[in-house]
Image (cartoon, rainbow, N blue to C red; front, side, top):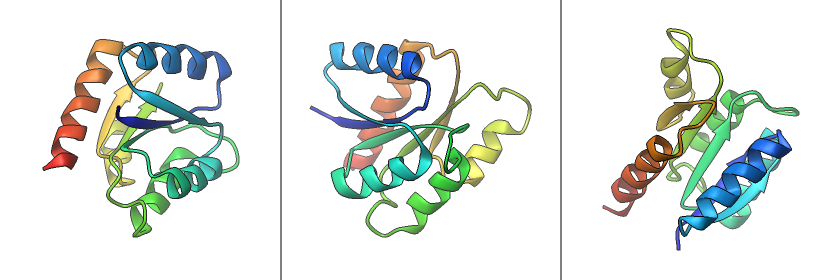
Length: 124
């Protein structure tokens, strides 16, 4: 069962996405701010991280950069989840170290496709 870490400060979004992903066979842990996400990623070593970009304590861009700078977590794929859908936002997330980008509200089928693609890439 692939282990995901969802870093999301909105309780309703986290609950909805966690339940939907769990029904698809994923084990999902949750962190509610960027620093907690970094700490949990280092401790739990998830297979993939879903990172909201607008987070308290430490924003998602900074958290992604720190995850990719740490030897313990740099190999974990990160998908940015954000309501930012302006031109350049995708590139900003990729420049911060995210491996992919998805907009909110989340379309589950599209997000799951990205998760599967990155998990498959990480396995090779």
